[in-house]
Image (cartoon, rainbow, N blue to C red):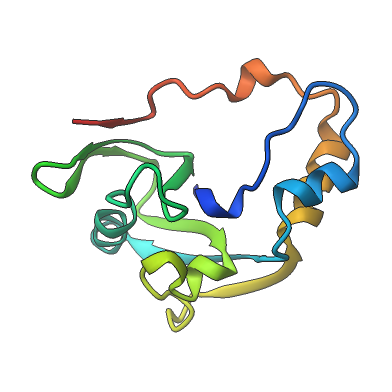
Length: 148
């Protein structure tokens, strides 16, 4: 996917330094959401982000992002300065959010929607297996999403 979006409520714990077990991963992703994706045009993506990016910071719906830079203008209730490559964008979200969970737009009826069948915790486990040891410095946010 070009962009990854995850609702904060789907992340239930932090990863501690040291060895990470599958039990640790299941503490982070206990719900068994399935990784899904869909494709949107630039305008469709802006419409989608104008819903998702305005979720309240302390709510479970608040989105975490990967692969995107933007400014969220809370006063005007819209996103600005969105930076992504390409013209058609592939967005990965948990199945819960794709089905409209946390008030996200329903994407399961989008003709490009794909339910991969991969459980989020299993995908995270595989990532750890392939990329350990993890360099946390590589994943520190650098103001990719700013609010004004």
